[in-house]
Image (cartoon, helix red, strand yellow):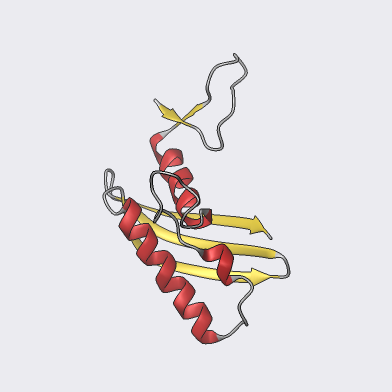
Length: 118
């Protein structure tokens, strides 16, 4: 059983579960939007992308952000996925991340879009 993220209860009052593919998507979201130091027993877990939102926008920052995200995903989820590409867009107060990846278990290509209001 894979616990759904964010944690909640299903219609029967039990812990909500999810499929393996959705669980991988949930894990990607956790890596992207968790700041290093936020988890007690894993102080280096996360990507730190939320701190980069307030830096001056430039091509160099976009390239650095994409490289940082790809590295964090490979470090924490490399046994589950193969990251092909990461695209980052900042629109007003919304951060959008598009992740192209291959699920190692099934060899299927997936695209995940993640958004966070800041």
